[in-house]
Image 1 (cartoon, rainbow, N blue to C red):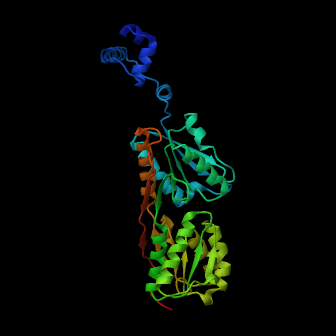
Image 2: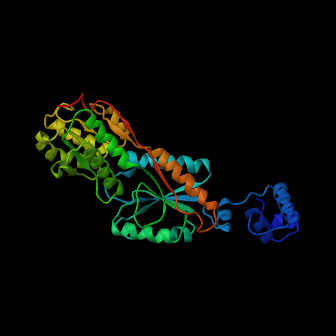
Image 3: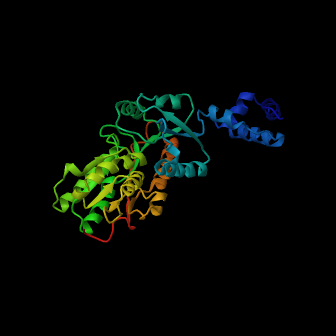
Length: 343
């Protein structure tokens, strides 16, 4: 196997010069550069990709930092799998590696060390929340102005690159659809309050009711945690409240599917006893019985866009990337879970 010393001897330069030429580090006379490249080609010398990355101060990796939640299979959830697929497509197309890392949401995560130790060149944070430790870790990262984006979570006082969907509009579309069918007493099963998109969904729900002149009824507001199990558990209370409800908006499909299962086990006919609209347009939504009317969220496009934009920042001057915000639009997908109209 050809060594760097043999290339240096043939080109008449030092090994350090060979390294600088092949790694593209520092200024170099064109004649010297040409001599080194010619010698390397004649000898069939191939640069070690890992060594090259570290010589340039780059790892070649985009890091995706996810929450570690015991007993939760993140990669089986539509939200994470679709976003990761979009990120993976962009990373592959651009010749980068993808490094998955896990953080404890209860502890302040040292994002900055990932860059200083050359584990990653850029980062994307998935599943961020407003828990104090999460906020503090992201605040420290944002202060360093390193290339990093947060997915689908916004913070009032932290300036960091963000790609999200307009969940206010998505919830508004869902509730307006139910109102258009003549339903008035529309309940809402929301997700965990530490996610900004939960409050965004609440804002869209309230907006649609206010436009229709319907006062908010706290007695038909329910809370889950975005899991199928929490939707199934909510069926007990919602079943007891059927006399108060014309229809129900659910903050994601997983909860809606769990709820539908729980209600059917109690003898409910759907949508006859309770018209339901979900959220996400997951793969499972079209296979429920009845097929679920839902709000389509472009998770794949969000992941692809975030990866492209954060990798673009690697060519910017340090600290000069600025704050990037992209809000994508949701779309209502009408199926059969809402029934035919007012009850």
